[in-house]
Length: 134
Image (cartoon, rainbow, N blue to C red; front, side, top):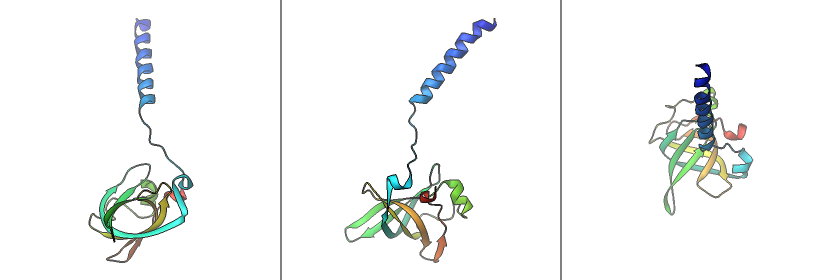
């Protein structure tokens, strides 16, 4: 009876393994591969979204310029790094006005690696666990 169950179990393990290999994986790139430290930028805007998930925390601002309003994404460190720096999911709220300093993405998109975040209304500076530090 033992041998009757062995082949189906091995087949099931093999199928499961094959399916896992076929799933897309989130890649993690080094800071210099994705961002240019020689292209610093400072932006201010309204927080519209916060994504607290691995491998990095992201937040999104609506930034107004002479051409209108654009959405910008800001990458920070991992949730664990952020928590070690005093952050949690409730440190900033949708609608808060933030001033962010960071480095522009190399691909020219509206993506910044944040290294300084200031809550404009209170002047509170939040310590950022930037992916530049990973």
